[in-house]
Length: 535
Image 1 (cartoon, helix red, strand yellow):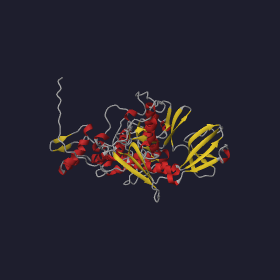
Image 2 (cartoon, rainbow, N blue to C red; image 1 turned 120 degrees about the horizontal axis):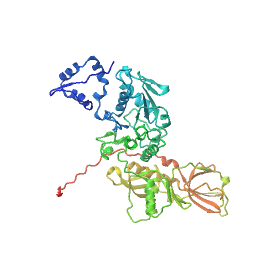
Image 3 (cartoon, rainbow, N blue to C red; image 1 turned 60 degrees about the vertical axis):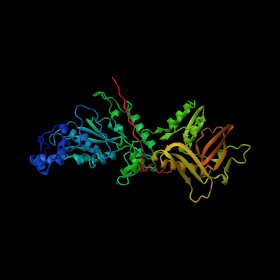
């Protein structure tokens, strides 16, 4: 079958019309608008070859944004949401580059690179997908898939090779004439970078979480993924300048991130009666509404500098803030206290440097009781203390501003089922949080306080300098883990540590599931103002 379709002419009530190349979409729209008789007249005027080729002529059926731009260009970026036809446009562009006028004729390109996050993604989406290359090619031009060599071979000898973004070195060597590269993106979920193309959607058969993920929403990881991608490809080592067209191999100025949603935020994801997929937002690929978040490390650094402290280290902090307020005249220490409780990090001085460290980092170091030092005022090398039951809190109430409820004041409560302790503790956080995140903070703080009743005191010889504040240790045969909160160096190193359950940091938060926004109607008289400018 030859794709030698002559220029098509459509008949309408206004008379015949022959569109230009950029107006091909008008023909498909016209077939929908005119009567059946006019459609029949149009189709009957085509040759047998033309009728066979028509379903495979993408220019006839494509949407305007799916047609490659005219003129000389180095990078063509297609930016669109799910269902916009990006995969189909990429597959058809590859076809247009490798195919000639007849099945065995050479096309403009002989070597094409197909690049995605993983080899599996390239194969399953770009090659075998419903809109992939094999689905778009007519029978007489369909390439052959060579699984062992990860490539497609067309009847005219053109070759498209699959490549993974995690193995950029594989792109060196072959002299590619062109490349089809998938968009970059990462879900806002724990360990999302393990499988950036995986998404959670209860209505999809492909719904899943990334490898080893606990399913916790993590917008900070998504932010770090995008920063790492830009940092890596911004260097000349990984992204050299071409001697042919004077530009980089990857044009980051035109890089598209999956996915920016054109639906107005926060109506999406909150208005579930209109958009039911809002429940997927918390752990999804969306970047809408997340660009305004601030890095926890940046906020802590700014507070330090405002307080006159410039020797600090925030490199071990992770997390992001939606909103934070300093409401009263207070010291830098007071401003940091609420952040330290909410995000679970500690601070200590080390060699003149104020160091901040998240409490869920580093592996626990095991200490054998035989290495502990003996000091005069201790009866044993290891002293264990538990606070009295009278000081135990039965429930914890945390207050904050609810991001999903027009920033109204909200509170959540944490308690253990069956706990008969009557004491209640309250904590006000000057933070804007999603309700699920607020509940997770309350659960973690309550669990931390419950196990922190157990403290240990011991001493280490001066030669043991590897331990620092914030480190985790296990001691002897005890199954418990302790966090070092105090070290005094007076000959021997006197250490005080509290028991922790590090699993509480991995507690699965409810995340943002979307909520219907309250409609606010205010009766008022409109006021109009006019300005007259003379130029």
